[in-house]
Length: 235
Picture 1: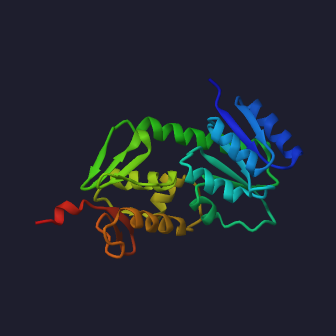
Picture 2 (picture 1 turned 120 degrees about the vertical axis):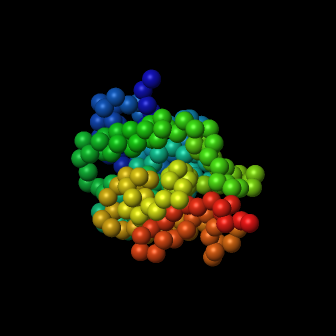
C-alpha cells in the first residue's frame, strides 16, 4: 500500500511540481492550498507525511503545525520556507516539525528528505517492540507513543516522546547533546544544541516533581544529560 503525502502550499506552480515528483517517487498525494484546508484534511484523513509551507493564507504554517500537535496528530511534518522569510529552525522543530527546507529547492532533494523521514519513522517503530518501560513512577509505551507519570497521561510532542524514550532506554548513561541531536532529530545542526536544552526543559516541566531539582533527567555539567531512577536514592 502506497504511503500518502499531504502537500500544503498556496502557490499552484509549487504544488504541481511537488505533486508530480512525489508521485513519481511512488507516493500518493493530496493537496491543500491554505492552512484551514490543511487542518480539515489532516483531521479527516490519515497521512504518512505532510509537506507544509510556512506562509499560508487563512492559517499560517506554524499555527497549522501547532494545532496538529495539540490535537495529537503525530504525522511527520516537513516545513518549507522561503529564503527571505524569518524562520527560527529551533522554534519550528520545537513546535513539532520534523525537518525543514528553504525555497528554492530541487524536487530530488524534497523526495530524498521525505524518504529519509519516513525511513527513520519506520525504523523507530520496528525497534519499539517492548510494551512498557518503567522508571519509578514514569511509564513509557513505545508502540503507542504514549507515557504516563503516576498514572496520569502526559501530553507530549513526538520529539519530546522520542527524547524521553531514548533517555529511558539509556538509563544511567550520560548522553551528549550531539548524540541526542543525532538520534532524535537525525539532522546536522552544526553544533546548535539549543533545541535539546529546550526539549529537556519541557520534559522536566511535565515529569519532574520539582522542576528546579530534577529527579529523572539529570544535567551532567560539560557533558550532557542522563536519566536516572529516583528509587535508587530512596531509603
